[in-house]
Length: 98
Image (cartoon, rainbow, N blue to C red; front, side, top):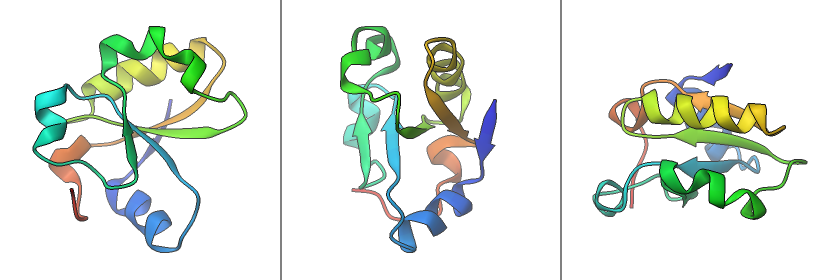
C-alpha cells in the first residue's frame, strides 16, 4: 500500500498540486474539522460511492489515526483505484482544518 506523511501531503497542497483527498471519518468527527481540500465519504459508504470516484485519478485517504483510511485503501485498490494512505491521520495533520 502506498503511504504519505502528513507534512508531504500538506506540501503538495501548498504547492498548488491537484490533490484528491477523501476523509473517511464519521460525520461528527468531520464536523470538528477536516482538511479544507478533502471530500467526506464515511468508510461505510465507500462501497456505495464508487460512482463518485474516477479510476483515472489518484486519491489520498485520511481518517483519525490511519486505520480506517488504510482499510479504505485496501478496498479501493482491490476495486482498481489508485490510492495512498496518509500515515497518522488527522492526529498527525500539521495544517489548518475547517
